[in-house]
Length: 246
Image (cartoon, rainbow, N blue to C red; front, side):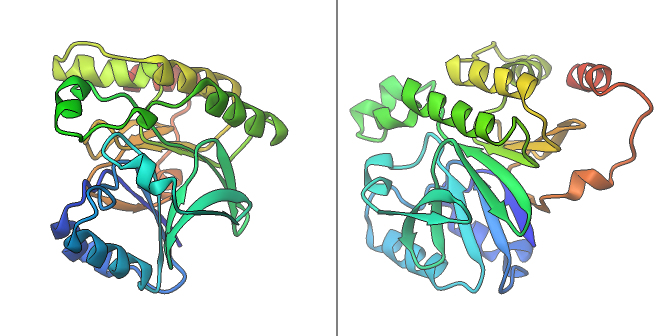
């Protein structure tokens, strides 16, 4: 079974969550960015990496804005389920940007990265890495992979959401809009690509935003959970527009 969850931020308490403990051999847990356990190279961090590496299930994460990309990028690059990954150790994988994975017939497009709004403050503490922001080459490579797949995948998993989804969530909170070029890139992907559902984690909510977009934080959900929701007799476009501003 494939499961998805939101930002873990290196939180040790997450490892004791009841749903996390239920994961078993053959399961795959995908984290929507800000994995956070690969950060400062501490003794505790090494122990946690070993913990994930030795689980019977696989933990695979896209990167966010609280991941040490220079350190992650030093890991061995290999191919897993048809896409490129960094093999951190054992059953712990980093899903690289712009890849399409085929897991038992289910296709998943992954693209990590983001832009820290507090990066100026974090640079001073050596807690920010320029690599968090995707390059034009990475974006082009992701678009090319989707084009080669016929602009059709089953699921999309990213750290950041498309721009309209992000703007609507920030508006609902009463926060100022702060979309960036990556959100715009995802907006174009959403318009041109056919997909069943899109999962992201950067906004730290457990909330179904539209029929095809879910923000995750602490919940661990089966990747096909939203397919069980009742379908409204409206066009997909109108349903999404209504849900965005509820």
